[in-house]
Amino acid sequence: MKQALQPLHDIKLIGITTRTNNTHIFEADPSTNKIALTVTKYFHNGLANQIPHRKKPGTTYCVYTNYESDEKGKYTYFIGEEVTSFDNLEEGFETLIIPAQAYAKFTNEPGPMPQVCVDMWKSIWAMTPDELGGKRTYVADFEIYDERSQDHQNVILDIYIGIKS
Image (tube, rainbow, N blue to C red; front, side, top):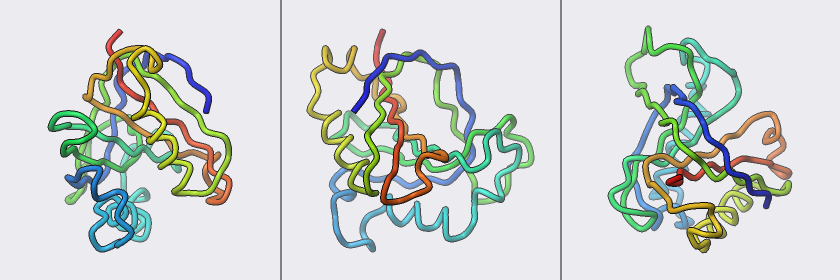
């Protein structure tokens, strides 16, 4: 897993959300895995194609935000795309701004989904602040899925962890 520190500007997103915690993401039962249900709803209903003002069509952001405390508490999971404007928002969609801040960026070696994502998060959770490049802010952390993640057996993704500079 490659790692780099990267400052980012605000990123505007439109998508859908659910409230969950990390206990649910490891459940094998898809009827209680809120993230899996939200991802399925997003892709199976073609919601990306209904988002206005898409900046990079086909690039999906999965954001973890509104943390109750840290990775052990509840948070909001958001899936959607970057947009240039929040105008003409359709019913059922929500907006989110990933704030400008410093991020630790992680990129994996190709592997099958969802295992590559799960393995990356487990490694990140095990890191000390020094290994991360700073203390986590728990404001917004996110994954980016782009053209490198089209083959579900050889996915490459980026995970950004908000850190205090």
